[in-house]
Image (tube, rainbow, N blue to C red; front, side):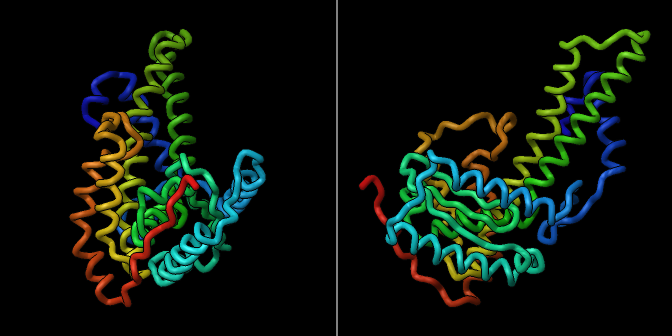
Length: 289
């Protein structure tokens, strides 16, 4: 937690109460980074939630599934190779439990993809111009698959539950310290803002960085050149015009930070890639037809 955020008594109360709740929560370690994770749900519960969410997305009348084999086939090829790499990874046990599925949504304006607990994946056609090749798409899908395998969504929910409980407890403690009076809405808002910036956002940035790192290891193991991940984010930076929200207040690392971190991880990823049979970096189809 940033030292500047701990200068106010209210932020100190949040930190103290949050630490107390953390002691009561379940912890696991990420097998790649060794980072401790707070998890308050089971894998089975997460898989059920992922399946339900996926069904809702696919049944949404505004979501149009692509019927074009030129768009579907490359996504399925990349997804299959990434899944096989996941089953060889340090997440192998969980990857083998997931019921993997991928859907291509025809939305040329949305440059996005996601993977839910349980292995439910989606790719929007708007990501094609950014990814450019199947190797670029592998970097995207590897990243998203790691979010599911590393249980980042469940960890995020656990963090929010703990932070909410800690803020309420801190509010009660502040009220008692002030002579028993109720804490004002303004004070509670300040407590919430402090917790949001000091705890929740940095964790989310950490999830993104973790998914970037492990994602390129999966892509490399699947036979895709991990250097395409750097090119991907360089294109993303150019497309955004270099504009990005302040990293301190963003849930994602800046483009520049991501690129530098990926470059640092590249020797490890390239070592894996060179031990595999390389996959041709076929171009993705043009969109807007």
